[in-house]
Image (cartoon, rainbow, N blue to C red):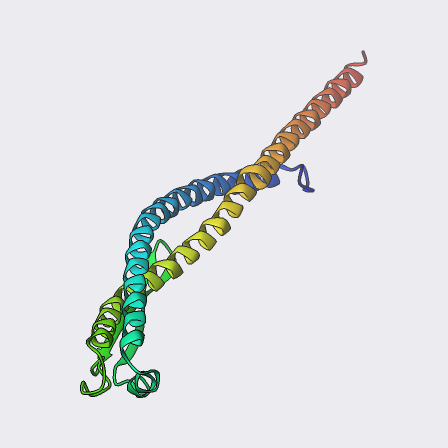
Amino acid sequence: MKLQVSATRMELLRLKKRLDLARRGHKLLKDKQDELMRQLLDLIETLRDLRTKAEEQLQDVYRSFLAARLWTDEQMLEEALSFPRKVVDLQVQERRIMNLRVPVLKPRLEGDIYCYGFAHTSGELDACLKKLDSVLEDMVKLSEAEKTLRLLADEIERTRRRVNALEYILIPNLQQTIKYIEMRLEEIELETLTRLMRVKKIIRGE
């Protein structure tokens, strides 16, 4: 669609500069989109491995907990787990992927996972909590990867919309407008030349 502008040489120069800027911006955004896609695909592979590992570990924890419930009195089990001593302090930092800020989660663990005496509890409960303790850091890594994946996907979608707006709307509109102004200027120049020739003929008395 042609832009509503005056058909002047100054406007033509301005639009040509704008077209050059739009083309350079399109190339930069396209390169950014390609790099973000590469990062996304790499992260998907990492995320798949982390999720598989975490799910296997959690299934093992659930199985151990079911075994602990079979060998421990329900009231005793509830009392044993009522006052946890393990504290997780999650520090959130940031890193950049292109101009996108993504989280870096660093857990700091304090205290003991065993929050009870060993006299009235089973070894299955000890094994269950030990497995749960070992899966915690992997769960944090999985959360970090999933959040980064969502942010990357959103940024890729925003970048794709900008690339498409430049490629299919702004650049074609500028090209069409520039072509129209060039044709209009040629017409004006031809009309001016025709008038001059007529004036010369009138002066010569032809």
